[in-house]
Image 1 (cartoon, rainbow, N blue to C red):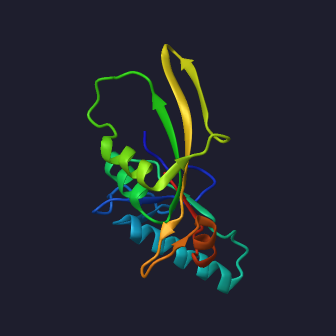
Image 2 (cartoon, rainbow, N blue to C red):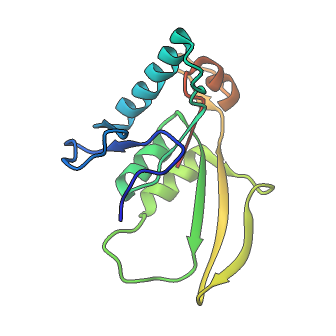
Length: 159
């Protein structure tokens, strides 16, 4: 059953606001809209000194098209990927566009990844952590993820 994750701010992304959305859950119609909402909340928290912690990172939990959009988004700095080493009948799966976005903008973090095969209930899998490389800037040059984080209100987006 879908319900808000406890102890954190939850933002649901959908074209239309779900009728059964709990009052404590926020809604956005796009990834950029959600990131702008989080940035506004950070500014608001800083101005009213409510004691709320700043929003330092956002985690995108899914669906397929949202994963692909997030991986291609310049504000996404890390991708945590679980590779399942077998196929299952399902209605959705990540396609080559997601891997192409990783290959184009990220490098696997060998120290953070656990690429040794694991198995649970007969299913083999491994964990990979991909970190964004420097981002090309309009007009030339590049910007490292750390430099970009300094100028943004939400410093880290993970998919």
